[in-house]
Length: 71
Image 1: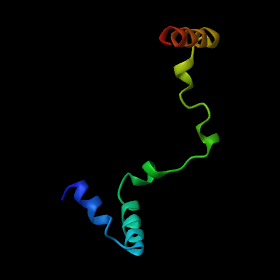
Image 2: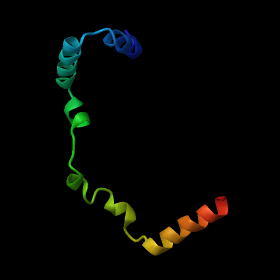
Image 3: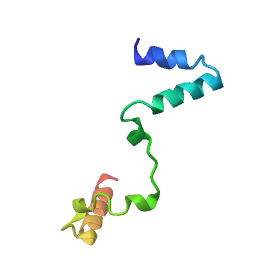
Image 4: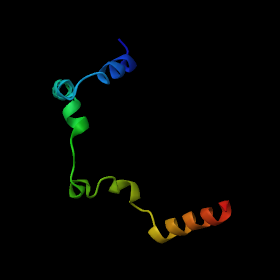
């Protein structure tokens, strides 16, 4: 059965059956992490290494120049 067929079949389920399906999906390996919700404060500093050594003013000016050029 393809994923599309599963989705189509799921559309025919009752609310109670959909809840059962959701509970079953939550028990699959790896689903916990994919559905984990975060508070905004949990994400503080994420990706900060990407910006190391970047001059913010220069970066913004470059973006503004590109914007003006593309208009």
